[in-house]
Image (cartoon, rainbow, N blue to C red; front, side):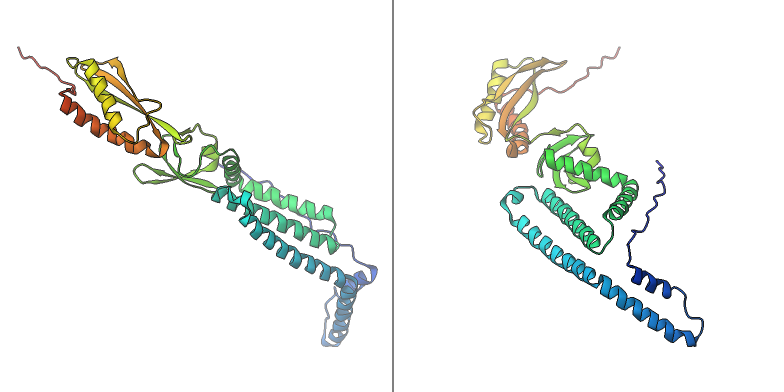
Amino acid sequence: MRFSIPAVVVEAPDITLSDKTQEAFDAIRDLPSDSKEFGAYLTKLWTMLEEFAVTYGGRLLIALIVLIVGFKVIGVVNKRLKRAKPVQKIESSARSFLLAAMNVIAKIVVGMTALAIMGVPMTSIIAVVGSCGLAIGLALQGSLANIAGGFVLMLTHPFRVGDFLAFNDIKGTVEEIGIFHTTILTIDNRRVVVPNSTISNSTLTNYFALPLSRVDLTFTASYSDDVDLVEKTLLRVCERNEKILKDPPPFARVSAHRDSALEYTLRAWVKSDDYWDVCFDLHRDVKKAFDEAGITIPFPQLDVHQR
């Protein structure tokens, strides 16, 4: 996709000079044509510097003090904010992003204040900053969309680092929430980097947003096996697993009649951190329990008759 950036004209700020300073500037515009005029030119140049120092030296000194003191204060405030308890509660990625943004904005304000002290009209400063911001915004509109998406994620918290997500055929654990991208670590240990603008506009499934999760599994048994025996066997497997919660109690019932087997649904509540351990343990333990109880796990068969 192509897009064009309109031309942005940035005019230099107008600084009003005193009459004497303006005359001194006009006097040195014409360069000397030979060595005889060079001495007189140096005199005019020195006069201009003296006049400029007398008229604007105080402003330059005050502006320089404002810059130095302002940047020092910003640094001290930034360090104290990092150690503040309310800021420490924010996620590391969101905290670093917000502190960096506040630091840049504060320095811009100090710089604009110094320019205003030097005599640059505030309207000119605002015009220049606005024009530059427009040009940068048009050139980096994709990145700005990602930054806006990052702000949305950090303010709304639809997920946090360590949550297991599913969206747009991607399943994995959130490894990092950055300014521009969110990093997802998939089950097969692949790192997927997703733009924040994409993930903030997608429909997400957060498996571990709440402290408890439910494991839903289905098992099959032969039509000849006793239904009550199969259900009791599934519940007995859940009772033996220490990570499965007793309240709410596990659930095991016939859920469907398939072509060659009965389907049983097993549901068990666990802590979100134990979800995958319980899921894998149940698959293993149910197979062992079925073998001990003599329950048959059927598989598709095809009988071929030849005439």
